[in-house]
Amino acid sequence: MKQISMLDLKSEYEYMKQDIDSAIKRCLEHQKWIFGPEIGEFEEVTRAYIGVKHCIGVSSGTDALVLSLRALAIQRKGEEYFDRNDGIITTPFTFTATGDAILRAGATPVFVDIDPLTCNMDARKIKEYLISLRDLRSVRIVGILPVHLYGQACNMDEITAIAEEHDLFVLEDVAQAFGATWKGGKLGSFGSCGAFSFFPSKNLGGFGDAGMVATNDDAIAELVRMLLKHGGKDKYNVDHIGYNSRLDTLQAAVLLAKFKYIDEFNERRKQIARIYTEELSEVKGVSLPTAPTKSSLAANSPQIVPEHVFHQYTICTPRRDEIQSYLRENGISTMVYYPIPLHRMKVFEGRMETPGHLGNAERAVREVLSLPIEPLQSSEDTQHVAHTIRQFLGQ
Image (cartoon, rainbow, N blue to C red; front, side, top):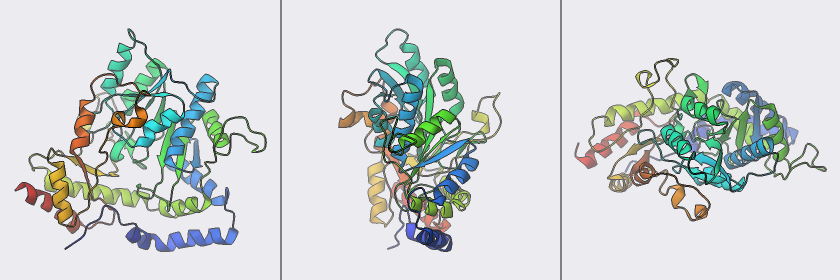
């Protein structure tokens, strides 16, 4: 039986082997394992690529979120942490790290519902909640943390406009969307900060944990650089409660080697997505990923369509579990991202705000199914996955 995996890192390594081996060999030769030259080089190429003033390498995507929030607390409040009365609006339909980082920074996550078409946070729900706070102030909102889920941009026009109106910071969670754009600008460049993950499965992934903070704010960049190395410019005389969150030199070297392939691999993902969409567009009972089009954007906005980089190709179907089981029986791997919304997790009990109904998120956890979208996946394999789904549904 033919086996189709969600990810094939061995094949990717073989594809980039010469570049990766050379990068690792360079590290072995210079032996500068802490803040080696590759870190600065990687920060510079990503800074130029994203189009921001600063990129700071850190040890993981989770630390990128935590360090960004800590820096924002110090900058905006003059205190080491936010407190329980500080609310940060985010989505309940994301990986645990997004909400957990808010708790670790001392604040309260405020979960608003998602758009059922994109599975991204619904900006209309943010507006509704902020209007409701005029009469009921359980927490004071200090920021918005949008997650560009599956590689697709949130509506950054609406989110940044809301933030400006209410004097809120915006921290973009770009863990799944390296290289994606919103109207020509790279994600991670719109908010006060952008937090990136280079976990091995990401569009740009290392050989272990790694992350990055992107920002145009000089003060935030300086604070993040202090916090990642125990809280000070001088590690023997620190200013803040810090962490040991350095980006590893070896990971930076691997990421530098793989960086030259990011646009090619993102384009391969989009090609796979186009095949899935062509093959499944007429299938009843299955909803396909929806990205903004020119006609769906505001009439007065630049006519540049946001670019979805398909970290995942995620369908929605009421028969999710049956389809997943059938695909598994036929040698096809799939994943559910995510099976439990954050507001149902024990860790957030008594530590969150849940204004309004979260029905779209509740439905998503029952219906989403991510299909294989390995960049080196063949057209034949992609068509086989789609054919197997149609076969199960009798279409």
